[in-house]
Amino acid sequence: RMIKDENTDIWIKLELIDDVKRLGIGYSFDMEIGEALHRCLSSETFIDTITHNHRSLHETALSFRVLREYGYDVTTGIYIRLPTLIFF
Image 1 (spheres, one colour):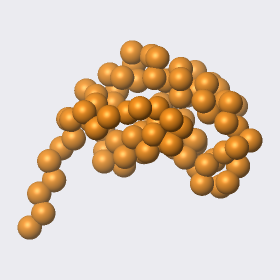
Image 2 (cartoon, rainbow, N blue to C red):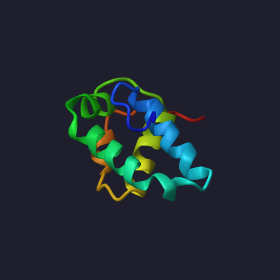
Image 3 (tube, helix red, strand yellow):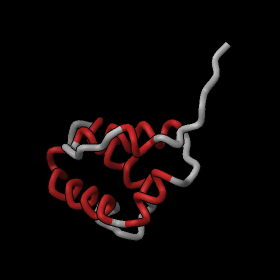
């Protein structure tokens, strides 16, 4: 139900999709997940959120992995604004 809800936050939806897939029941919701991801990608809000808003490394990796797992051709160029991490 939350996967189909258009008012659910994008990141909560991606976390839910990831959880369902990791539980091994993603095949039962493939159609709903596909529709939800298509709606997310076709909205201007999603594109602005992942390209311009500050987000954590976890959110960036999650969105990249989930979209790639479901066959979307997402390039790393969309994630250029990642903060630089410096290790000593």
